[in-house]
Image 1 (cartoon, rainbow, N blue to C red):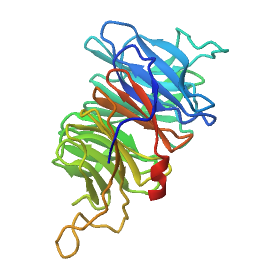
Image 2: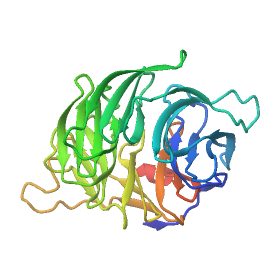
Image 3: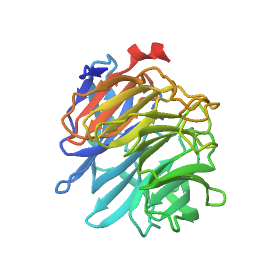
Length: 351
């Protein structure tokens, strides 16, 4: 199904951008953080909230950020804390920030830097927070290493607990933290996906020979992940049976860049790509599915998985985020700085 956009547009970002994050810890409203990526200007972080009448997206805070933002994550247990990965020239950095009390003022020029994750020597890719509740650990990933940190926001301190090396792997591109097991993460490279045990910092099972751009854990079903790949679009996997994916979805007409499970309705999956499109998929999987073919070897007949394509964009879409406060809503961010909030309520009956 093809469709334009009937969504709510936020036009407050002045510069190019690729990072948007749901503020999960804000239990009272649908709220997102978005960060810009300007080479020449001082960059910004916008705190964007859906109005009480649900008719517009408003800026609840605009904060100056000194560098280009390549990764942004909101702390899942403190709505005023977030992380960024940024570049300045050829140097890379990662920091944890705190939003100041606004006292009714929407513009505050000064974020409080709680601490920097400054043990990295290589190109930092992302910072990961454990997604479910309070946890005093953080993960940062550069192109050759994974760092596990112990953090203490009240004392503004972070200490490296352990480090894992990519060894002979290609450069790491990113990863995701298992919501069902805080000792397990998945990392992606240009040609493989690897699971890691954080207790030993050793790699375990792997998916080889695929160009991965993103990975996301199913929030409701243990061992199930979704991957965005150049060649095969979107694949759903059971980490205990990696010979074949449980399901393949076509993906996008150009690069499929990101994929996200809905936080409550896990059969609903969003994907976005460089074809200026967001796709909404219905992808029901059972852990007893063993592969893409039936026992007889013939392809299984499946219900059409594509529920809708949101096409009212003029640039590549690198950022999508479901709302934790209202899982029928998601926000997308195109590279030209356009944020759009959409509702998937018409499709929830397919759940």
